[in-house]
Length: 143
View 1: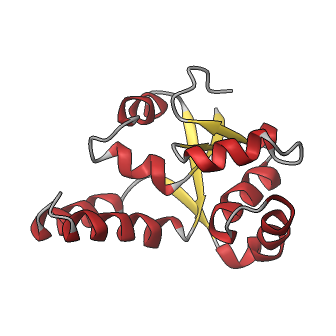
View 2: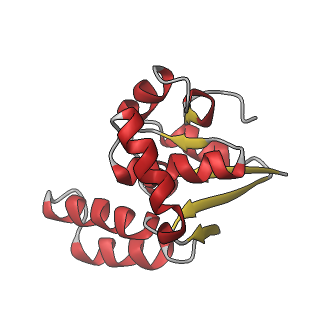
């Protein structure tokens, strides 16, 4: 079984139809084990909050999504344990510390962050230090 770090941009797509939701759902069809820093849930919650504020979802739909997502099978790792490495990745690459926390976890686990975040993918592609640790959710192969 493969281990993948998943970020908020992928997890929200498991529940809400958006661009690249098909790729995110395809990831669920793998026999993967999903891991994320514990900041995943506040980030997904913030995305849901924004969708409610923009009237893309009703408040009850938002509450239902929060309840559903809180039970998702993603093992979490305390962001605190990744903080120093994440800060180092952020300084070296220009990523936010938030994004760098996912990358630091992928580096630690010798795997990849699966993301729909185009900026994260572009930044990783241009940086040898993290290039092998970030993959766009639409890529067909899950290695």
